[in-house]
Length: 393
Image (tube, rainbow, N blue to C red; front, side):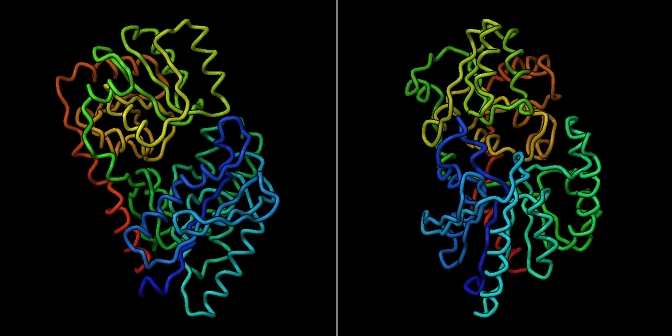
């Protein structure tokens, strides 16, 4: 089928306002930078004729709002309930999707629902209500219900709800025609429940600009960092599950190393206070860094450290490798599919400050590195090609 006869609905599953640093303000800028938005923009970049829209729920909105960004229409719907992140649900968005599909059929246009994450209420409802439509499930690192409750002790009081969710998943995941998964565990799980669906390992992509070499010396000069310092960086959300506490603890044994923490969340102040209690002068919180400045920090660092207890396929790993910066990462999620120990970086066990210390010391002992070559498979042009194949399958 010609791309001109397709309408792609790129659908996010949760409110983006959860990622606002102070929990206030308009989440539009975060929406524009979301995974679903980036896929849509790259699709249009390489296939200008494609008709794609980005839809998402938002707990801060009382009514639907539309806006254009890079010639792509964004539709933001109010949530019907939003107790915690990823459990958002928007009845208005479901109604609009039903109406959109009906109108497209009348005009001879095939609708493809490309939903970002499916281990949630939105995902299960879409797989149930729109089982006769073509659905693509993009994994974002979420866990199936029973795995999630084992990982998160605080939810054990509502075990029956998770059990219902698991039964529901077992019944409807087969209605999703293709999954882009981020870990071997996830692919094995899907193969048992969606026997006829296509299941692939596929990540986000990165822009070509990340591959432009910037010498460490030059990057540090631009950032006013000392050339002789040993510098490691963390980039991402500042939450417990990302291993930030273990990383801060590790810095007590890495006095000669400077840690630059890039990112924010509602827990930011708690981690700042924790580092202050330990009198760590080698830990600095830089807040959010984007674009050229973010790339400069990646080039200036001796290594990226990502000590997460749970992950999908982190984009920051791809970005670091593209800037020729090796990584210290944990053996979780899709990371073992991305990083081979001793090649792209050092792989360590999660939830261990001792392991972080070992990994950092090992990677700082490397004489030279050429890790950029391993980032080539993450260029957006290749990700888009694989995505288009599924649209036309």
